[in-house]
Image (cartoon, rainbow, N blue to C red; front, side):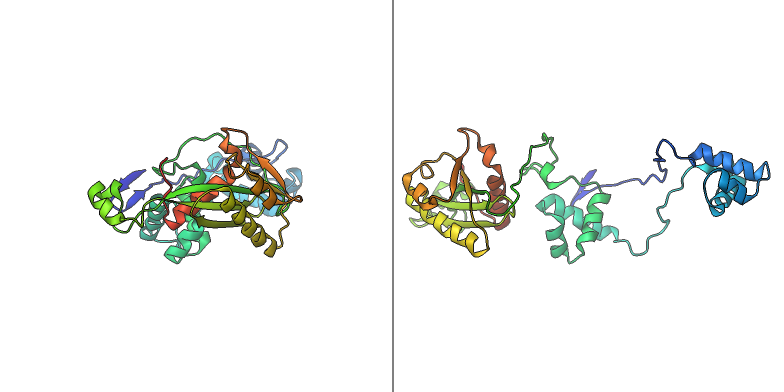
Amino acid sequence: MRTSGIGVVTTRTFDCREVLMSHANALLTPKGRLRLARCVVEDGWPLRRAGERFQCSPTTAKKWADRYRAGGAAAMVDRCSRPHHSPRRLDKRRERRIINVRFTRRWGPHRIAAYLRLARSTVEAVLRRYRMPLLRDLDQASGLPVRRPRPHRYEHPAPGDLVHVDIKKLGRIPEGGGHRIVGRQVGRRHSGQRGRGYGFMHHALDDHSRLAYSEILADERRETAAQFWARANQFFNEHGFTVKRVLTDNGSCYRSKLFAEALGPNISHKKTRPYRPQTNGKVCEDLSTTLHRFGLTPAKV
């Protein structure tokens, strides 16, 4: 893999040698083909008799006999089925554009296909051909592949069986940039009294269908969380979901009596173990995807 001015270009050398994958009782392994061909060519067996002996058709017997006459024992291995020329294959320039968008923006094949106006299957084929790693195996900051242990994933069998709820704190960045980019003096002038502070993204995600409902609100108090859940529950009901369980962290707004009253007696409230945010990782991952897609910035706290 090498880098260039347009992104990352991966070069791959195709090896047309195939490995024969056969079961233990296969008759026409390379050794069996050689015995078949020698019976026909050297011993003079009829094709039909040789086919019956080696449990294949006369056409197959003729094929291996002809290959033995042309190339000897070395011709008994499998040939590469890859065509010598593919006139409808995507040109190199467009393939490099796909790899460039994948590496710089870290998009999936659906978004790359819509952006470049290509078929999704074409984009997937190019990504496989260049052996691009899956998005889940990439570091979100650098875009480079990282080693991650295989997680233990679960999914509830029906929509509404479990809804993940969480809050993400967002810094309000004024037009023209904040003080981290342009310095404190210019940043204060950009901010004034309007742009300072934070927004709070309340997010609810269904465990089975991945249907999500989000709102950016002014705070994360118990009243705000309870009102958000009432609207989120109505949203899920409109889509035919009956919520049975809600999973949250141990934030004060979720431990309040007001939030418990908003859930009602028919919804079970589950909380994550303290200092164990991985339990509610599905909603955190979906929040990160939403923030990245809409260009929002989480606060550094």
